Image (cartoon, rainbow, N blue to C red):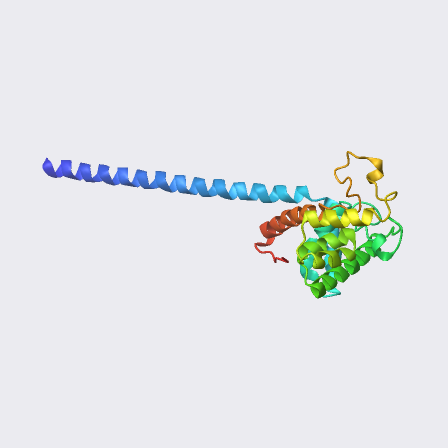
Length: 224
């Protein structure tokens, strides 16, 4: 009798231990599945924050950047396009003025991208020459190469305050043109030359694109 009871106790203990093992295993697997599902949901949501048109132009941006050995800046140029036009229109890089033309004179998307890459390359090279930080280079895409000289004189580091100073200085040269359309409620007023918050906006676009790229490939290359 004692042996039978002992065997029953042993069997019951084994069953309880086995049940506990399966419960713990199920909880661990469920937690991992939940975390994976959350990550996949977050990654799949991120690309929707960037225009489909910009995503479609990204291979062409990379191709043009490869021509000048700057392909590592593909996401940066995509982020700039997102800020400039969301990939819409005949001049998605809004590059006409950098070519000395009136706004939106370029009406060929490929030409716009070529000119945009050329403008960025010029700003990047000059920025390196003047030893300014990369955010200043991005801001120069919007405000022109002269911004790099201005930042270099201020210590070499971009900030929105320095961009405001430069904007006001340029606006005062032609107040009738750079008056934010006479709208004093415009967030830029009275800093109506360019957009002093341009680098901040482009940087946010870069973060979204980088997160999206990392989610798809498992890696991304920083340009900062």
